[in-house]
Length: 271
Image (cartoon, rainbow, N blue to C red):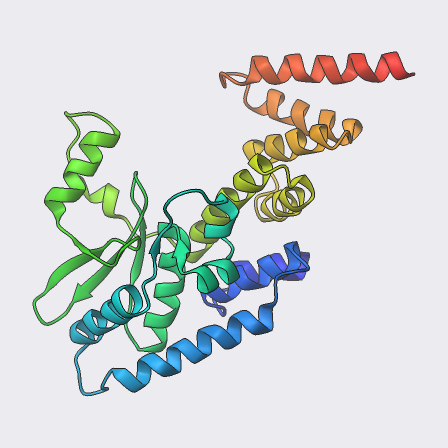
């Protein structure tokens, strides 16, 4: 796993390629070669429909039209498993995703067309920024549907998410690096798999996240909770105590203490 984490931390691979590598490590049913072939075919099809003579802004408009209108990628509706809108292979196949998964795929394709899209973890969701050199304006894109978002709408999103007295600030539109984005989608997938009771897969993701951030008490806490559900009580207690010691003021700390006590009590009963 160390070489995998080293690759994630490296700037040599794209965000999408790094995530594909992690997904292959986590899930034996994830077919990396098929996913890469699918992506490459899509990139070649788009290249045939977008002239190199166009400037980046018009290339982007064409890309968004093909991806969201012609190919009908977008957000999921109705009943669906959360993990299915995060696994890259499922998103490519079903054409339904989250802002994260769709945004990562869109950035990957755009990059192959020499279009730079900048990821921003907005308080409500991932958004993408395009810096239009011709008009010298920043354009914000909603990865759910490819629509252009005005700053006024972003301000309303903030007010609805936080409070009516909140105003859009520069810090809300700060670019995040690929490392943060990879951890974000892995955490989302981990929580989805826990909800779906796929704990072995969730544990694999948790181990990757702890390897990436070996001293993060919250990652270690989550791993401990998964271990406890898998009845690996010795390791669970160790992880949960680490969290309690490093985050004594966290509101969940008291609940975790009770859980540790219950695990230890259960161990004593069996012994």
